[in-house]
Amino acid sequence: MTRNECFRLLGLPHTASESEIRKQYKKMALRLHPDVNPDPKAHEAFILLSKAVDILLDPNYTEEKVDKRPSRRAGNETEEERLERMRVAKMRFEQQQMRQATDNARYFLSLTTGKRWKIYQCIMWVSLVLSLAMTIELFLPRHYERDILIGSTKSLNNGIIRSNITRIKLRERGSYYIQNNAFAWESTYPEVLIESSWMLHTPIKMISTDDFSRYRSVFDFHVWSIRYLLIALLLVPLFPYLWRRKTLTFVFVYHLSFWGVGIISAYILLTQGRLLHVLSLGFL
Image 1 (tube, one colour):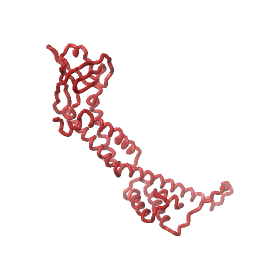
Image 2 (cartoon, one colour):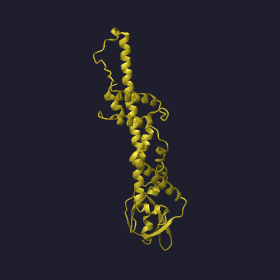
Image 3 (cartoon, one colour):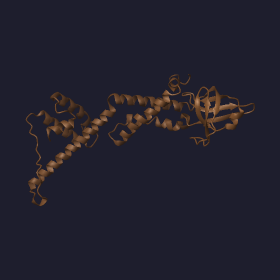
Image 4 (cartoon, helix red, strand yellow):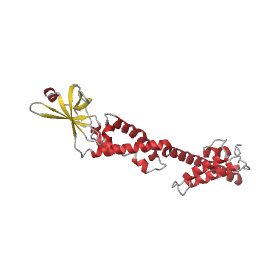
Protein backbone atom coordinates (compact mmCIF):
# COMPACT_ATOMS: atom_id res chain seq x y z
CA MET A 1 0.00 0.00 0.00
CA THR A 2 1.46 3.35 -1.04
CA ARG A 3 1.25 6.56 0.97
CA ASN A 4 -0.92 8.10 -1.76
CA GLU A 5 -3.42 5.28 -1.36
CA CYS A 6 -3.40 5.77 2.40
CA PHE A 7 -4.18 9.46 2.07
CA ARG A 8 -6.97 8.61 -0.38
CA LEU A 9 -8.50 6.10 2.03
CA LEU A 10 -8.53 8.70 4.78
CA GLY A 11 -9.88 11.37 2.48
CA LEU A 12 -7.00 13.72 3.28
CA PRO A 13 -4.66 15.76 1.08
CA HIS A 14 -1.01 14.74 0.78
CA THR A 15 -0.07 17.79 2.85
CA ALA A 16 -2.06 16.70 5.90
CA SER A 17 -0.19 16.97 9.19
CA GLU A 18 0.21 14.22 11.77
CA SER A 19 -2.47 15.77 13.99
CA GLU A 20 -4.92 15.89 11.08
CA ILE A 21 -4.21 12.24 10.29
CA ARG A 22 -4.85 11.21 13.90
CA LYS A 23 -8.02 13.31 14.06
CA GLN A 24 -9.40 11.81 10.85
CA TYR A 25 -8.50 8.31 12.06
CA LYS A 26 -10.46 8.78 15.30
CA LYS A 27 -13.47 10.09 13.39
CA MET A 28 -13.51 7.17 10.94
CA ALA A 29 -12.68 4.58 13.60
CA LEU A 30 -15.81 5.55 15.52
CA ARG A 31 -17.87 4.55 12.46
CA LEU A 32 -15.93 1.49 11.32
CA HIS A 33 -15.06 -0.19 14.60
CA PRO A 34 -16.72 -3.64 14.74
CA ASP A 35 -18.12 -2.91 18.21
CA VAL A 36 -20.31 -0.09 16.89
CA ASN A 37 -20.75 -1.03 13.21
CA PRO A 38 -22.76 -4.22 12.50
CA ASP A 39 -21.67 -4.30 8.85
CA PRO A 40 -19.76 -7.58 8.19
CA LYS A 41 -17.21 -5.63 6.13
CA ALA A 42 -16.54 -3.16 8.91
CA HIS A 43 -13.91 -5.39 10.55
CA GLU A 44 -11.78 -5.62 7.38
CA ALA A 45 -12.26 -1.93 6.69
CA PHE A 46 -11.13 -1.06 10.21
CA ILE A 47 -8.01 -3.20 9.85
CA LEU A 48 -7.08 -1.49 6.57
CA LEU A 49 -7.76 1.89 8.12
CA SER A 50 -5.38 1.12 10.98
CA LYS A 51 -2.76 -0.13 8.53
CA ALA A 52 -3.05 3.06 6.47
CA VAL A 53 -2.57 5.26 9.53
CA ASP A 54 0.44 3.22 10.69
CA ILE A 55 2.02 3.70 7.27
CA LEU A 56 1.44 7.45 7.25
CA LEU A 57 2.80 7.89 10.77
CA ASP A 58 5.89 5.76 10.10
CA PRO A 59 8.65 8.01 8.68
CA ASN A 60 10.78 4.96 7.81
CA TYR A 61 8.09 3.16 5.80
CA THR A 62 9.21 1.93 2.39
CA GLU A 63 6.44 1.75 -0.16
CA GLU A 64 5.64 -1.64 -1.62
CA LYS A 65 6.45 -1.73 -5.31
CA VAL A 66 4.50 -3.95 -7.62
CA ASP A 67 6.33 -5.44 -10.55
CA LYS A 68 4.53 -4.11 -13.65
CA ARG A 69 6.48 -6.22 -16.09
CA PRO A 70 4.47 -8.70 -18.14
CA SER A 71 3.95 -11.84 -16.09
CA ARG A 72 5.05 -15.19 -17.27
CA ARG A 73 2.63 -17.65 -18.63
CA ALA A 74 0.90 -19.77 -16.03
CA GLY A 75 2.81 -22.82 -17.19
CA ASN A 76 6.21 -21.19 -16.52
CA GLU A 77 5.18 -19.51 -13.23
CA THR A 78 6.94 -20.75 -10.12
CA GLU A 79 5.13 -21.38 -6.85
CA GLU A 80 6.80 -18.36 -5.27
CA GLU A 81 5.68 -16.09 -8.14
CA ARG A 82 2.15 -17.44 -7.94
CA LEU A 83 1.95 -16.73 -4.22
CA GLU A 84 3.33 -13.23 -4.73
CA ARG A 85 0.79 -12.56 -7.46
CA MET A 86 -2.01 -13.75 -5.22
CA ARG A 87 -0.73 -11.58 -2.37
CA VAL A 88 -0.69 -8.50 -4.59
CA ALA A 89 -4.18 -9.27 -5.92
CA LYS A 90 -5.50 -9.72 -2.38
CA MET A 91 -3.88 -6.46 -1.29
CA ARG A 92 -5.52 -4.60 -4.17
CA PHE A 93 -8.87 -6.17 -3.40
CA GLU A 94 -8.60 -5.16 0.27
CA GLN A 95 -7.69 -1.62 -0.74
CA GLN A 96 -10.69 -1.45 -3.04
CA GLN A 97 -12.96 -2.77 -0.30
CA MET A 98 -11.52 -0.24 2.12
CA ARG A 99 -12.07 2.64 -0.30
CA GLN A 100 -15.65 1.53 -0.90
CA ALA A 101 -16.37 1.17 2.81
CA THR A 102 -14.77 4.55 3.49
CA ASP A 103 -16.72 6.27 0.72
CA ASN A 104 -19.98 4.70 1.92
CA ALA A 105 -19.28 5.72 5.51
CA ARG A 106 -18.41 9.27 4.45
CA TYR A 107 -21.57 9.58 2.34
CA PHE A 108 -23.76 8.16 5.10
CA LEU A 109 -22.18 10.59 7.56
CA SER A 110 -22.92 13.51 5.23
CA LEU A 111 -26.60 12.53 5.24
CA THR A 112 -26.98 12.08 8.98
CA THR A 113 -24.86 14.89 10.44
CA GLY A 114 -24.45 18.63 10.13
CA LYS A 115 -26.83 21.17 8.61
CA ARG A 116 -28.34 18.68 6.20
CA TRP A 117 -29.46 16.41 9.02
CA LYS A 118 -30.91 19.40 10.93
CA ILE A 119 -32.91 20.39 7.84
CA TYR A 120 -34.11 16.80 7.53
CA GLN A 121 -35.24 16.80 11.16
CA CYS A 122 -37.20 20.00 10.54
CA ILE A 123 -38.88 18.41 7.52
CA MET A 124 -39.73 15.34 9.57
CA TRP A 125 -41.33 17.30 12.43
CA VAL A 126 -43.27 19.58 10.08
CA SER A 127 -44.59 16.60 8.10
CA LEU A 128 -45.56 14.78 11.31
CA VAL A 129 -47.46 17.83 12.56
CA LEU A 130 -49.29 18.11 9.23
CA SER A 131 -50.09 14.39 9.21
CA LEU A 132 -51.42 14.61 12.77
CA ALA A 133 -53.47 17.71 11.94
CA MET A 134 -54.99 16.09 8.85
CA THR A 135 -55.83 12.97 10.85
CA ILE A 136 -57.42 14.84 13.74
CA GLU A 137 -59.57 17.04 11.51
CA LEU A 138 -61.30 13.93 10.13
CA PHE A 139 -63.13 13.76 13.48
CA LEU A 140 -63.55 17.47 14.20
CA PRO A 141 -66.47 19.73 13.27
CA ARG A 142 -66.34 21.78 10.05
CA HIS A 143 -66.08 25.47 9.34
CA TYR A 144 -68.75 27.20 7.25
CA GLU A 145 -67.77 30.43 5.53
CA ARG A 146 -69.73 32.59 3.10
CA ASP A 147 -68.49 33.43 -0.40
CA ILE A 148 -69.84 34.60 -3.75
CA LEU A 149 -69.92 32.35 -6.81
CA ILE A 150 -68.80 34.54 -9.71
CA GLY A 151 -68.90 32.03 -12.54
CA SER A 152 -68.03 28.60 -13.90
CA THR A 153 -66.64 27.07 -17.08
CA LYS A 154 -68.50 24.67 -19.34
CA SER A 155 -65.55 22.33 -19.89
CA LEU A 156 -65.75 18.99 -18.07
CA ASN A 157 -62.90 16.83 -16.79
CA ASN A 158 -62.30 13.66 -14.82
CA GLY A 159 -61.27 14.33 -11.25
CA ILE A 160 -59.76 12.30 -8.44
CA ILE A 161 -62.96 11.50 -6.57
CA ARG A 162 -65.53 12.58 -9.18
CA SER A 163 -65.77 11.67 -12.85
CA ASN A 164 -67.45 14.88 -13.90
CA ILE A 165 -65.88 18.11 -12.62
CA THR A 166 -65.62 21.67 -13.80
CA ARG A 167 -63.89 24.86 -12.73
CA ILE A 168 -65.56 27.64 -10.75
CA LYS A 169 -64.44 31.01 -9.48
CA LEU A 170 -65.23 32.37 -6.02
CA ARG A 171 -64.82 36.00 -5.07
CA GLU A 172 -62.76 35.39 -1.91
CA ARG A 173 -61.14 32.02 -2.45
CA GLY A 174 -60.36 32.15 -6.15
CA SER A 175 -60.61 29.27 -8.64
CA TYR A 176 -61.33 25.65 -7.76
CA TYR A 177 -62.31 22.39 -9.44
CA ILE A 178 -65.61 21.07 -8.20
CA GLN A 179 -68.25 18.44 -8.90
CA ASN A 180 -70.25 19.54 -11.92
CA ASN A 181 -73.65 20.81 -10.89
CA ALA A 182 -74.29 23.49 -13.49
CA PHE A 183 -78.09 23.36 -13.37
CA ALA A 184 -78.13 24.03 -9.64
CA TRP A 185 -75.65 26.89 -9.94
CA GLU A 186 -77.66 28.58 -12.64
CA SER A 187 -80.84 28.52 -10.56
CA THR A 188 -79.37 29.27 -7.12
CA TYR A 189 -78.35 32.49 -5.46
CA PRO A 190 -74.73 33.58 -6.00
CA GLU A 191 -74.07 33.58 -2.27
CA VAL A 192 -72.75 30.15 -1.22
CA LEU A 193 -71.47 28.43 1.90
CA ILE A 194 -68.05 26.79 1.82
CA GLU A 195 -67.69 23.79 4.10
CA SER A 196 -64.03 23.37 5.09
CA SER A 197 -62.01 21.21 7.47
CA TRP A 198 -61.28 22.44 10.98
CA MET A 199 -57.48 22.43 11.25
CA LEU A 200 -56.30 23.42 7.75
CA HIS A 201 -59.51 25.09 6.50
CA THR A 202 -59.38 22.90 3.40
CA PRO A 203 -62.51 23.31 1.21
CA ILE A 204 -64.64 20.16 1.18
CA LYS A 205 -68.05 21.12 -0.21
CA MET A 206 -69.84 24.14 -1.61
CA ILE A 207 -73.46 24.58 -0.53
CA SER A 208 -75.72 26.57 -2.82
CA THR A 209 -79.46 27.26 -2.33
CA ASP A 210 -82.51 28.48 -4.14
CA ASP A 211 -86.02 29.11 -2.86
CA PHE A 212 -86.77 25.41 -2.48
CA SER A 213 -83.63 23.27 -2.35
CA ARG A 214 -80.07 23.09 -1.09
CA TYR A 215 -77.30 21.65 -3.30
CA ARG A 216 -73.98 20.24 -2.15
CA SER A 217 -71.07 20.08 -4.61
CA VAL A 218 -67.79 18.37 -3.69
CA PHE A 219 -64.44 20.05 -4.36
CA ASP A 220 -61.91 18.01 -6.34
CA PHE A 221 -58.22 18.23 -7.29
CA HIS A 222 -57.47 19.52 -3.82
CA VAL A 223 -55.68 18.51 -0.61
CA TRP A 224 -58.87 16.99 0.79
CA SER A 225 -59.27 14.80 -2.30
CA ILE A 226 -56.07 12.88 -1.49
CA ARG A 227 -56.09 13.31 2.29
CA TYR A 228 -55.50 9.64 3.12
CA LEU A 229 -52.56 9.39 0.72
CA LEU A 230 -51.07 12.59 2.15
CA ILE A 231 -51.46 11.38 5.75
CA ALA A 232 -49.47 8.24 4.90
CA LEU A 233 -46.90 10.09 2.77
CA LEU A 234 -46.20 12.65 5.48
CA LEU A 235 -45.22 9.82 7.84
CA VAL A 236 -42.48 8.55 5.50
CA PRO A 237 -39.68 10.82 6.91
CA LEU A 238 -40.08 9.11 10.26
CA PHE A 239 -38.71 5.84 8.82
CA PRO A 240 -35.13 7.04 7.99
CA TYR A 241 -35.02 8.99 11.25
CA LEU A 242 -35.70 5.90 13.37
CA TRP A 243 -33.96 3.32 11.12
CA ARG A 244 -30.55 4.68 10.14
CA ARG A 245 -28.77 1.95 8.19
CA LYS A 246 -26.18 2.01 5.42
CA THR A 247 -28.51 0.52 2.83
CA LEU A 248 -29.92 1.56 -0.52
CA THR A 249 -33.40 1.51 0.99
CA PHE A 250 -32.38 4.08 3.58
CA VAL A 251 -30.79 6.35 0.96
CA PHE A 252 -33.83 6.12 -1.34
CA VAL A 253 -36.36 6.86 1.41
CA TYR A 254 -34.10 9.60 2.80
CA HIS A 255 -34.02 11.47 -0.52
CA LEU A 256 -37.73 10.83 -1.10
CA SER A 257 -38.42 12.42 2.28
CA PHE A 258 -35.92 15.27 1.90
CA TRP A 259 -37.01 16.42 -1.55
CA GLY A 260 -40.43 14.92 -2.19
CA VAL A 261 -42.12 15.13 1.21
CA GLY A 262 -40.21 18.32 2.04
CA ILE A 263 -41.57 20.17 -1.01
CA ILE A 264 -45.10 18.83 -0.46
CA SER A 265 -45.05 19.85 3.21
CA ALA A 266 -43.82 23.34 2.35
CA TYR A 267 -46.53 23.74 -0.29
CA ILE A 268 -49.31 22.62 2.04
CA LEU A 269 -48.12 24.73 4.96
CA LEU A 270 -47.24 27.93 3.10
CA THR A 271 -50.31 28.25 0.85
CA GLN A 272 -53.82 29.49 1.64
CA GLY A 273 -52.84 30.64 5.12
CA ARG A 274 -52.50 27.10 6.47
CA LEU A 275 -49.52 28.01 8.65
CA LEU A 276 -51.73 30.41 10.61
CA HIS A 277 -54.51 27.83 10.77
CA VAL A 278 -52.19 25.19 12.23
CA LEU A 279 -50.60 27.58 14.74
CA SER A 280 -54.07 28.64 15.94
CA LEU A 281 -55.31 25.02 16.01
CA GLY A 282 -57.88 25.86 13.37
CA PHE A 283 -59.58 28.73 15.21
CA LEU A 284 -58.24 31.39 12.82
